[in-house]
Image (cartoon, rainbow, N blue to C red; front, side, top):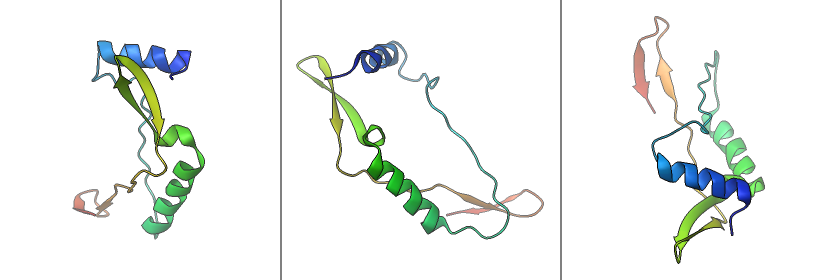
Length: 91
């Protein structure tokens, strides 16, 4: 079952499914070499350690329920840019 806070967020999401007020996106600019596989591995470790990052919600008999997945897929999205700031390519 959902906690009170989860139910509140679930209800708010039903009113406006496109609302992203509770999302916390960010962009990082890195200078120098970046080991993308290492970054992905660190995030995978965080996801494995914290159940909230593996939780999904589903309606069961019209009642929202949470499911904690054993594992979830994860990849870092990144873009290489040229010195002038023009986009070179996306990996």
